[in-house]
Image (cartoon, rainbow, N blue to C red; front, side, top):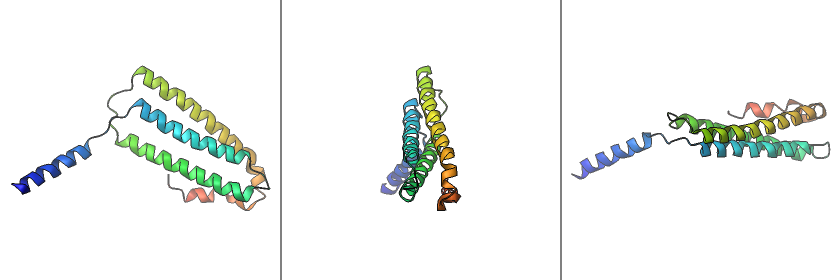
Length: 138
């Protein structure tokens, strides 16, 4: 009897684990906001970049960008594993769109900052700034 009970409990645990969690607009909004915040932090770090602080700020910025990649990877996995069969309600869709607009604005600013610093960085050992990114799994 104990063996059957253990078998049933194990099977039930497997079924529970196999169920997909429901994806909510709030979950998506929080995930996008977290990546947006990390991106804003990276932009703030790189905005202050100068010859005087290049060796202290570049490692911080690269670490921050790695955190962005890790957060995005986690979010993609969460979305891929979630139950997406139900569409979001209209107000949830609006929330996601609004937070995504902020995400795009922050990333445009971050890219403009990086592009603006590229000529400055060409005179430093960080000329090959993309090399550390190649080891960052996405």
